[in-house]
Length: 390
Image (cartoon, rainbow, N blue to C red; front, top):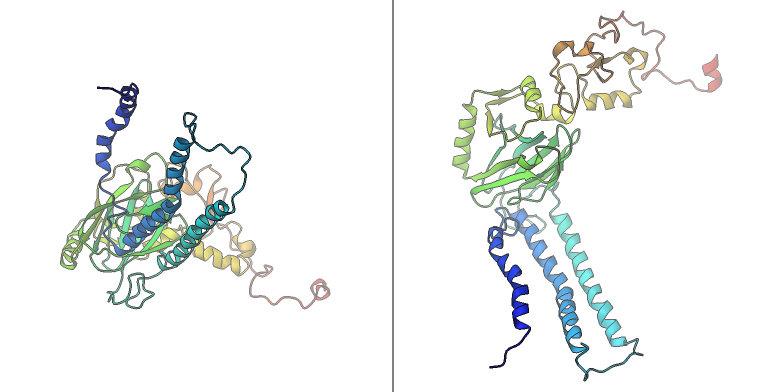
């Protein structure tokens, strides 16, 4: 029986490829394409539709490449040889028109989906323009405040008055309104089964709206590299029935820990592989203090500082309104105690205006400032330069 002398060589070349197929068995759980939330499902559908549209061009091109290589191989002496051929109107129309139509379809699909799945857009009930479609009757959203720490996640439930670390729980079929920020470098908050990722940045607040439509246990992570503990910056994401969620809230409320300002300053220090933690009570407005970078008792908040700047500043009276700061990459902030103002380090922060002003050199109280010669916001401006010089 005749045999192909090249068959053995082809089989040997194919063996390494075939040997890798069992390794792909671990890729069977496609969370993005099999999510537990309608927003993530629409995003997964967008990926599938976009891929299929692109394959309308990619697949024929790959097939044509193989066909041309076979038809015009050197051994095929019957193939037509036309070295002077350089143009075909029909081919030019096909080559340019088909990709152009695909691009138009992708552009229209992306435009509609980008606005419909805007993470800042609340999940309104009913109506054809709702992200969840018409006929959906939604409950009041559950607000969850998220803070990306080094290297763990803090979840604050203001309505329930509790907080957790590396554990997120939400009731099924109830919209979730995330308010997201960070304490150090930029991270990216991502629960693949629920919705797309969104950045968590210090001094800023981002938002995300989503909803679980089935119960189960999933996972979340940081999708943006943020340092040594990044690979372990993951948390459990659980979807429960309303009754189970209420029982979980009661369980957290029975925990001994409370998330005060001092407890937060200790919590935000870098740590890795932190197990889930529960806090039965939370400092009021703690998330807003984190966003405004003023968790310390005597530190001026960013929004207060901006308001003062808008009014023209504090004038000469505010020159020494600072305190020295123990702050480095190892999160020394808040760890030096009340003596941190006496450190020789040159870094400082603006103290709250209601506190007594300290001498930046001696550390003692400054003499009261005579505000009579000071100028600033609230004084009428001269009518002209000549009037100002009189």
